Length: 143
Image 1 (cartoon, rainbow, N blue to C red):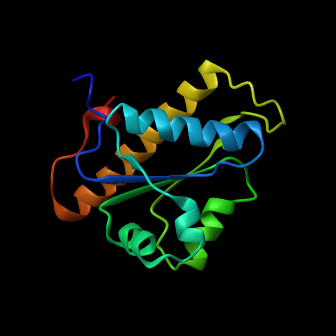
Image 2 (image 1 turned 45 degrees about the horizontal axis):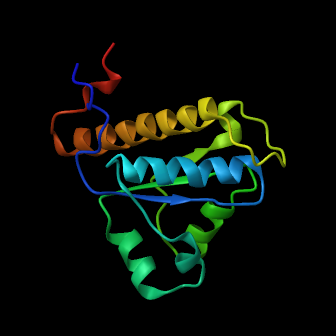
């Protein structure tokens, strides 16, 4: 299996919570690093929250959209709902077993855990899309 098999095959927009807790900042840091690594492109959740038409339309038009919320409060998800943008790929960091707290000294292992979860989520979304279109799927899900 190729090392980059979980790289997106289509355009991927990443929208991340950047709330005032460890999980909010983990969301943001993972999104930054994934963008720097060439996995998708971080976009502005605040622009969407402000209902700026360019941000909202871009999120509606993008092939793949990955939304990362820090916790179950779901602020990023709420922004998309208010903007009437369909939720396609959605991750809640506390669902990975990372506990929410106010420690903003992020742990490298947790950043990597979030990044890997985003890659897996994106591969699942792409697989579902390609199965609907009869195309080949990402090898990441092969066992």
